[in-house]
Length: 75
Figure (tube, rainbow, N blue to C red):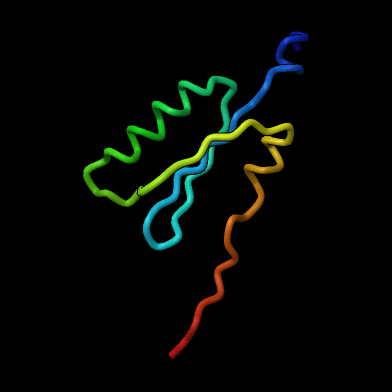
């Protein structure tokens, strides 16, 4: 493994959508993630509504952390 791979900064992209949908991914290139997010917002189905990109020291852990707990309600 290369030394720079161990020390590279990662960014996490979270794209939020309708009905509580959250898409998450990580990458070490902020501009690439911004391009992905903008393309997702422009999709014809319109499910994605907003995004955020932030740097993360624990990107792998963040990727597996649930955003919302789903509690079904039965009427």
